Length: 107
Image (tube, rainbow, N blue to C red; front, side):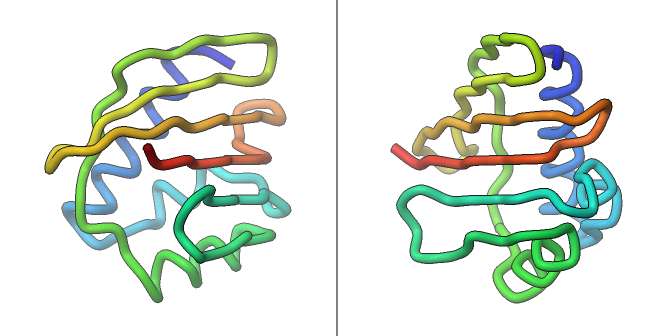
């Protein structure tokens, strides 16, 4: 896991927010990826198809910016801020070049 991979993930997320096309974002996940949110009453989403359905049902409407990344092997801990205010963290675990688990928490 690298800082660059996490930044590319956020770039794909932001592109999805602005375009409504989540295909590049979703391509960054393994087929069996798990996405969990701490705070909002949604998910967990198990599998890329479930993640896609979740984003289709409730598409995010705000972009984010990374404020820091701490890498440890195949895991990154990312802090971010929303463009409209608010912050959060993500724990991103990878299998090869793809995300196998994503945990998002909102402050």
